[in-house]
Length: 500
Image (tube, rainbow, N blue to C red):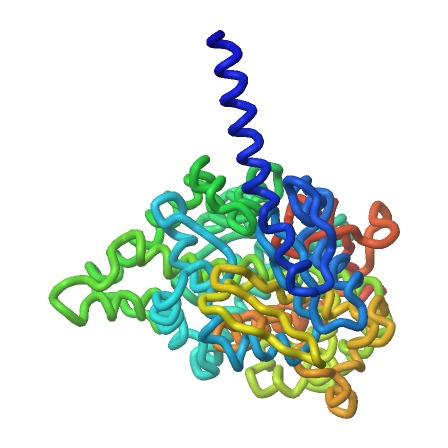
């Protein structure tokens, strides 16, 4: 009798759970909105949840099923979500009606992942504005200009490493991460990173600890933050590894204490935080907050920048003629990296077009999701989409960038798309590598400057080719759901120009 009763309770619980999961599955049908039929229990995200495809690829597949429509409905597990296709709808969500869509659909528990929870991408309204304001002063053009000498020194260390390992196979993401880790450590915190040293890694231990891992459990934590935050909180899943967090907190606070004790000052982001803390009688930031704000700068300048740089190396290797043309543009300025100041770099139109096209085909962040904070009806071309409070909309960046309606021959790498005479052909809000509106990426200037300097320094010294073991088209790594990375890596060779 007890067994029967227990079995009955389990059955009722299972039926209730099933009903709870599927009760929202009529949301888009009731509105008369075209949608993709969901499947229990993953809705339309089974390939993402099972790590068979990245978020960008899944949203691209959904995007293509709504060809000709301004938007379409799908389901994130049990929740209805609207995927945006029409640029005007995207403008509405990201700019015009931003106050109703102020927060990213990405949930991080501060008690579980305190450093990442302070990142402007993860913080919610109204806190995100305060957090963002802390980062802004370090991202001005005048600040970036002062960082260029330190970036050039990091370039020279990368060049020396390549020379010492000439003609060997190099994985582009690995070498790019060493460089971007060095630049952030030097420019933002005044620390020597030594990422290219195998004997004295220094601050590079943070990068080598993998802030964003690409194994199953690391990716599962990110998946939960994107689609099932309750599970992530229940299991206390961390995205930033605990050993990375502990090391980062220790290093940042040791550097801060050293400056205060010795009266040392530097014109960098860490100094900005120290000065703010010393203005009043009571510190504004505690140790975790100091490290968290520094981690925001580090992640913005390290992870996504290394992705961009790695794919830039890859595209140069794939397109030797483009590589030659950019090198000629550089040599017309100078053959020495020290001669490339901010004005010289900004005048390099072929390099700029190349980087823009790399960002189109390989956006480091493949999509952005926003939570609706107040009921709204979105309209476009006679279609209406009622979005109730708490639901999400998706801006599928990767899909927009590879839509032939937006970019003819989208799979062909064509930097000339971004020539001055062609830029007017690009529809606004179809090219979004850094997002748009009030929550667009803060680190644009820093990222572009560090990447361009790296490319300049390498192209002045080396010819880049693909390695023999790297064949065929790249495939995205499904265990990197959120970020655009290559499965198996991007394997390249650097050849001394004098011997080419």
